Amino acid sequence: MRSRFIIKGGNRLNGEVVISGAKNSATKILVASLLTDEKCYLKNFPYIGDTDIVTELCQTFGSKIGRNGDTLEIDTPNIANFRAPSLSRRNRVPILALGPLLARAGRAEVPILGGDKIGPRPVNLHIDALNALGAEVNITPTSYQASAPNGLKGNRIDFPFPSVGATENALLASVLAKGKVVMTNAATEPEILDLIKFLQKMGAIIELGANRVIRVEGVGKLCGASHTIMPDRNEAVSFACLAIATKGKILVKGARQDDLITFLSALRRIGGGYNVMDDGIVFYGNGDLIATEIETDTHPGFMTDWQQPFTLLLTQAQGVSVIHETIYEDRFGFTEDLRKMGANIHVFAKCLGELQCRHSGGGHRHSAVIVGPTALKAINSAVRDLRSGMVNIISSLAAEGTSIVFGIDEIDRGYVKLDERLRKLGADIQRVD
Ligand code: EPU
Image 1 (cartoon, protein in one colour):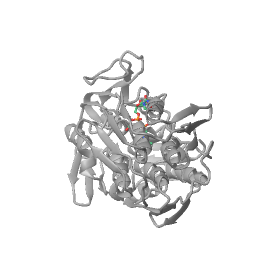
Image 2: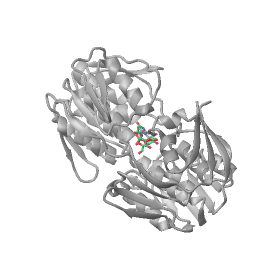
Image 3: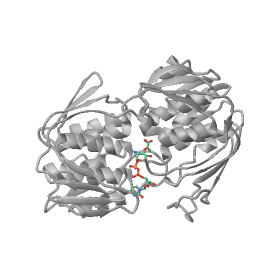
């Protein structure tokens, strides 16, 4: 918590920034490399806290890992050790290693999950999927221990909710299973497609059907592969909102329209400026913003990770905006900080939207009403989780005065050298470790 950014706000941020490889793709693809005894090359690899954790996980299992510029080379000729009961830090990825380890070593142990504090985030769907494929999973207070006494076998997995992590877990456990796996109501986020592309290069047989159906035909062996990690669409949105909140103009190099269709449409509706270019997207403040209504959803809907920076933009929009968060039950904690800065935001337990929502009637404050515009003033705040921590930083850059944002280790989990890149755009931001 003592590491912090000291930010003097009020500058318009202008220039170019290149976005990094996606955290939520790189970490999963690194785990996927455990499925082969051959070498894999991961290009455009982001060196951030979360990929460091997964690197440590793979090394514990016996992977040899080298860096060559932005290419990570990973070689796991043998699973030297199938147990990683604890790591120096935690995130949500280690549970995905159960499938690959079961396929190669028949047994596995990984630490229980860490990650963002944005709700209880259970793993029942992961465990159900692994069970359906023949794994037995024992949950201890500190780890998940798995075995597959009769090997992993094909089956049908009907997800009650299209969970990103559970779909990835099922994919990683299916590709070397005996027989066919059919998943219904699977998640199809771009990061999952990036994982599927990598698995396909390794020799996996995976078909994408209509209506969120994924079919996998298990194969006997997978080979090494080389893959360029997709650009981070969450980072792209962070820089987009930064440009608009500071009334600046930023070319976000590497941002892909394909991954951002719903975000771009929401931005156009509120009056945020952007031009799609060949090498990225230019985002700019385009005069006054106007209020709107947003509901977060699974892909291709408005992504939950975009909700926080968009909420910040809506504090600067004329009129009353409504946001219905349908993915996480507790992702509006950060609005407390925005309120202290002067924003007019109220959070409600009722569903303020039309989408069917798992949190209806649960008493979770998952809808927000924002009345804008309101001037933002500097405050001292502490990062609560990765995406809302980014809002602490963007709002401090947009506010008049000097703010301190504590707990920036959490930011380093997901953003490469953020302060250096912000300074190049004209931000007055200093890191104190
Ligand atoms: N859920 C369950 N049971 C499960 C799994 C999920 O109830 O077994 C619930 C969760 O509690 C949550 C919802 O389903 O309410 C969505 O969870 P999902 O499994 O889809 O998300 P995830 O795999 O845990 C990934 C990203 C998140 C991103 C979500 C949604 C990673 C490491 N994390 O989480 O990213 O918000 O998908 O797109 O890929 C971030 O990068 O900051 C981040 C939080």
